[in-house]
Image (tube, rainbow, N blue to C red; front, top):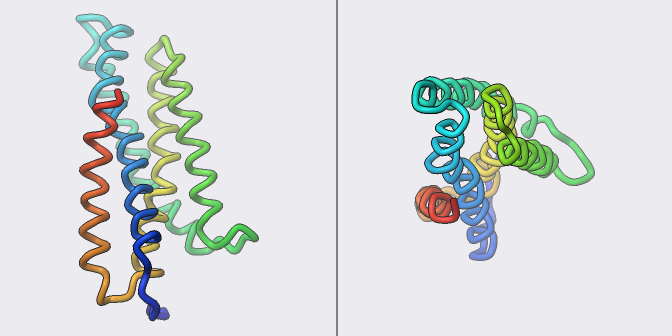
Length: 164
């Protein structure tokens, strides 16, 4: 494995941080606000907790497998668009499709399918963002960039919940 030698610039760091914000907003807005409301509407007072547990648990299981698989795909991808960008594009498209399905779902199975697509899709860009730190960030900058990666997660959660 080669080590990155050139320092990354502030615009690159900003782009990475904003990417993390976008992924976490896409996950936590629906998770914290929209899914509980939707499962309450679909499941009613007697079934909302079970439906929410099924939706979130299934999505978590998919995320557990999807993230390392997307990482594997992005490590081996050799496309004209670059080594990792096809994973970002494909994952984002799948995640957005899942969000659109969630938007229109009026049944438990459709809600589960929508959340599974959200988890499956947005784990692609997240795997790439994490890998970019090892790919591009030299050791002397990893503390600052890693900190901003974490800040992006927090800002993403807060902004996703605020938008939802």
